[in-house]
Length: 193
Image (cartoon, rainbow, N blue to C red):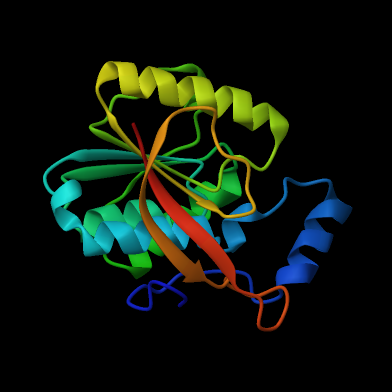
């Protein structure tokens, strides 16, 4: 699957109709049903740099399918928590963790107003709405002040948090499942400087 072929993930089989169905029902958009390019890039970077997470606690905020937190556990993290306020995302994270044989903590709490209690904070593709830019930016600053390492990944077309970032890697990744045949995005992995 994309940049992380060693993972099995339960993702949308009909990528466009799942969005249309959620809209008809008035449900939250099913972002969890995709492996977004930023999340794939962050997962790949973690798997290729296991020394960055080995033996440490990890919090994956806005985790969606939990690809990044699963990768952290596969790379040797002591523990990982996938956090998403969408109950369907949490259900998908639980299923994906089971499919990949990892013991992943799950939280539906809105943690963006808190200070994270983890050695490493992962955030992938979470700047898709203006409100999130402000809330996540503040969360990142609190995490940094607390001493957590913050790893952030995004699509090259995404908004970026208004904080100093150090580029760790560039990747080419397809949105999985694809909404458009042959569409490939460029993703980057950053460390909060």
